[in-house]
Length: 144
Image 1: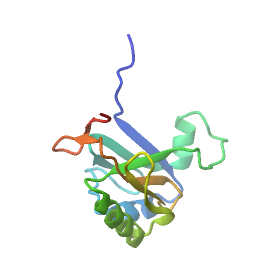
Image 2: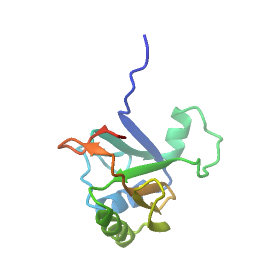
Image 3: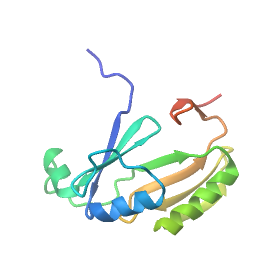
């Protein structure tokens, strides 16, 4: 038995779950049925993005005493064009995001900028010229 190369769910621990629900709702993300102030989820391009209380997630994942710090992890939301990066970046700021780095053209040929949600989770808003998506927004190819 091996582990299949797939990512099904990303769960972030929240200090203020209602506040994060407000933020992601302001981005225009639609919550799945059953979401509430104890657990919330969004289907994003074929991956379930879930928010769970940090203390409960730490207990469940076996790290109850670990302090919350930025772990060096970021999430990425790929856009359809370089111009969409700037529009999405501005929309995220209006929704309450903190700017980390404004969008710039990258040496690898794409364009991206970074924001943080209200609890510091980093998101790269990016256009990558080699990213290919299906009709649902799922990444189906990357690279030449």
